[in-house]
Image (tube, rainbow, N blue to C red; front, top):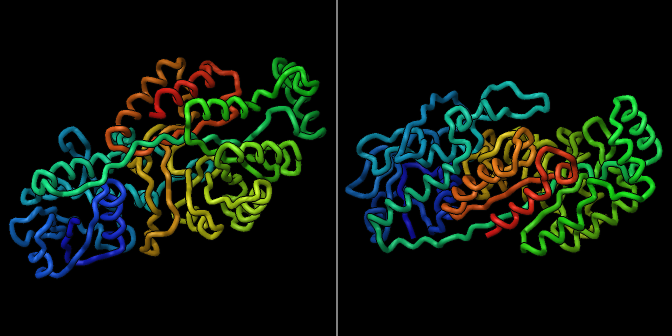
Length: 431
């Protein structure tokens, strides 16, 4: 057990220390504010405050974990043995940076509370993030910092016990449009046909007609193949189905379609099924609850996980809505068109609500890769090379590698054979 002395135990302090030590490093930790208790402790211990007490392991604290609310911080990342870090701690500190404050900044998504211009879908732009601007978005820096700290603690305390984690891979399949042509109703099908003719998309016209007359399988209907792949490679998978009414950005098959309902039920026999929340439910809590209830009724079991359409996360409101709708897990923390670690980590963490200064009971599982980030890449080899680097960085810190692939891209016609790429991902990175 590791004892940490600090001058004030705050919710931010507790949140950060438990994430760093308990969830990432597997170290039992206890906190104290009494000098006498700290001095009497004979086991591993560190001081996290402005001044060391004796000759103990000391990390000089920034003020961030002891503040409330949001302030406009000036942050200048610097190099720490080849890894970017920030919040310099000074010469007397055993660490050159206050990695705890830096981790809280990233995990809480502090910068997303600061003034910024959202994109067309109301999202925080990745290019405005500190990690993107300083070129460490592709590094799970919070986990890397934690393991660097562990190395230094073990030098000082060789008997310190840390329970090792196991690397895990999870495949998320995003199903916001289950079928391209089939099961879409007479009016939508005819309208789609005339639109394809008007825009001279004759290949789609042929495909559409072939699917209608059962001479060809719908290109997006690749679910049996995906299930077979997951069985073959023993993959932990999750299918997020959109179960919403038709709208500008929500164009799935009708929720009343029996074949669509049967598809979801059949998938639930082999994999976890969760909710891909609709675009329309982003700011509509009652609609979000309704979608969850209807999907729950299809699979006849509780649904505890959600993903937001287009990864639309508006902090803190999105997570408050998900909690109000009684979701326990979120899989939206990442960028659609940029690979990497939006919250600086590859370890699931709980949402910290800065306006309320409290850790909320919803766990965030950050994804590292969304298939749409690779749309402009021309070859499978180029993409695999990029994934290899991320995989190794996650494996080094025994993290969780989550990828998001959509059945649309897996069934579409593009420069890259997406099904072949996906098979390679399952084969190479599920170990």
